Image 1 (cartoon, one colour):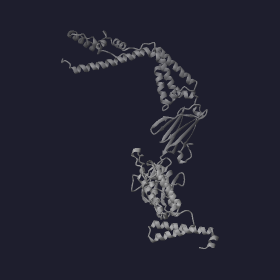
Image 2 (spheres, one colour):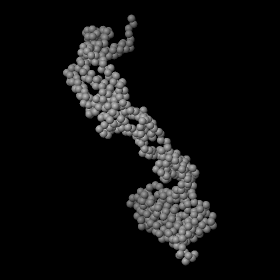
Image 3 (cartoon, helix red, strand yellow):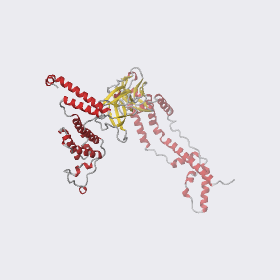
Image 4 (cartoon, one colour):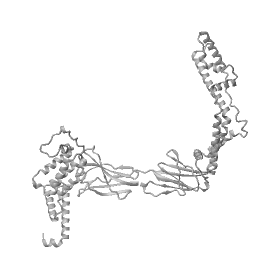
Length: 579
């Protein structure tokens, strides 16, 4: 017979070691069962019985004190088993090996011989003898047989409870299918629980749609399934029982138990926000109530331009648009973006709605005054943005148009408006204040270096320079001292400012100055009419552009109307003084 290779020998040794570990573990378990089986049998039987009754819903029907008394009895038996176990020695591995060898009829401790490598003697002859001894031990261990479970419960369990109780537990799991864990949790809760009679239980359920929909509650009545908007709240009330288990909510592929809020002595309520198709199941004893909610998706709003926005004769932007939403549009905006500089942040302008929620929107010739906007006179790309109550938004296709500006005729008014535009479109930050050694003191300026305009952004410095040029002119330019003093005030604010926030509100002041220069203070209507007529003649003579001519005609008509109204109110004086 050919000698075995080292690889075969190692494989055989590994297989023997694995088998020996498995048989030793089995022997040790049988010893544990033999020593602790009867000690723990009453406690385990009580636990199985209590769990089975929980799964069948017995504790839910009879309530306390019977449940609590049984629970305390189970805890007592469990504690008794723990105390008894402390006086019994847990089997060691050596005891398990001896039991395995004894069961297999083996003498001379072959397992210990195989494991006792440290007993090898030094020297060639002794080592060879020890190897031969171990080889014989391995042959003997091939006769090992697994131990058998000892009969600990059979002599004392005449009623076969060791078989009946597991079967009862399985039947309980089948009866309480879906609610077994919840019933067990409720039975272990250390609070007083009243009996729940399924015949007395009654349910009321409804759906509260989200507040933004403006819809009233939807009641289930005789139905068990309803449709509702996303974000609705399902409310279910249970009455007629002293205690209530937690209902099961299935939603979005997940299942969860809902906390129950007690409203009165025999009434309870649960609430859940529904974001997807959901089903709520509330089981009281043998009575099960199911409510299903089908979510109706909230569609985003639709909005569109019906016509390209354009300016009218009164310098207003005219918009025509339409839109719709299944729930209702709550916000509408016109968003503008500069076509010549798309990097500038977009400007959003709120548009009024005919109601708090508008399902169908149709607006024709909506006039919007943007003459005071910082982009007045600029070419922009505009979109309409509609937002519904749930926050969904959509936008229209972009339209290219010009933002109407107010036509000013007088040169001084034009200059003031230009200064205002520079201020409103200024960006950036002021430069840092120079250190004392770096300051260059101006020879002919009373302002300190930290207040100088030289640190301002470029647009502010240009506006200041234009203002100096306007103020440094012959005295005939300013017919109204108020406009002159107003510009002086703005110029001084420019020189003293250290940030844009300090002068951002001056755009209104500059607008008022420009309007006063252009139209003057309230005065003689006849003089206003004559000025408007002269301006119109001048525009015709120099062939002004169409928008300017429309503005001049509109101002002339307004001046004539004011003069006629003035004559109507002062008829006697007008007739006496003549024209």
